[in-house]
Amino acid sequence: MDRTLFDQLRQLRLPPNGYAIFGSGPLAIRNIIPTSNDLDILCNQKVWDIVSRDGVTEFLPEYDVTVASFFDGNITFGTKWGIGNFDIIELIETAEIIDSLPFVRLEHVVRYKTIRSSTKDLQHLNSLQGSSHSLGNVK
Image (tube, rainbow, N blue to C red; front, side, top):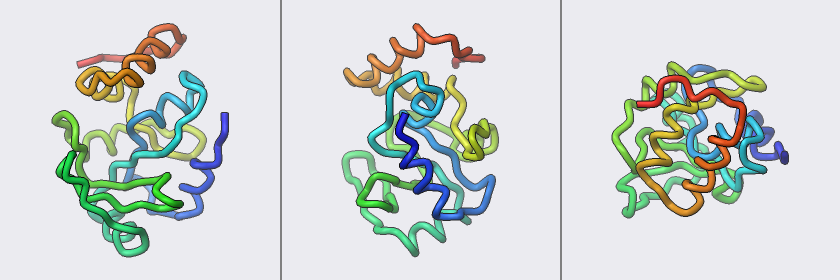
């Protein structure tokens, strides 16, 4: 797996416990999917203040969210998730640390990908089902 995005994220030297990688990132770090083309990251206000100052901010009307992007848009941060109804602080506080980075727990990734149900999301859910990773309590 290409770890370039994770290395780039580490270069930002953000405060610990203030963000968590969501979307496909938690699957890619576990090698459930081959790679992730980008990283979608949820963050609290403290981290948002940093990334919105240092990154390129943009409003995404299709999701009704503002994001801050780095590395040509390959890493994006937001304080809310545009699909589904998630408690962002809970997702950050319950994140699993893997390779020194925080990742949203798989059960929340499954919930999001089930709600979105794009072709890619359904393929990712199939890959997860075929893997040896535990889903915990899927809600």
